[in-house]
Image (tube, rainbow, N blue to C red; front, side):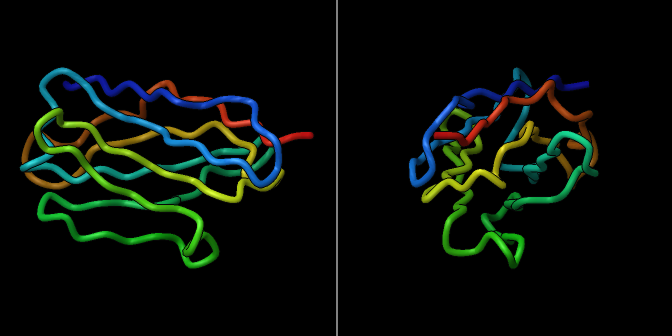
Length: 117
């Protein structure tokens, strides 16, 4: 099974921006969809955004306007761009593949985003 790896998390001040990345050897973004999730301490994991194999995008309603999901087909990498970060965005962000046969993956280990002044 493909192992996905997230990166790009950091400690940032409110109002800052980050771009998170997700990729993994053998993951084919031309055939598979990818979803980003986040889990804050003491809370349940929640869906953030997803992008399908054909580029169809969905963003959680409460996050629209600040979160953007995109993919680099050549590098089979999915990006999550977050702007105007807020303290409530603090969470472990992880990605997961879905879709066609062979696209389902486990969650990656995640990348920590901490928003604090």
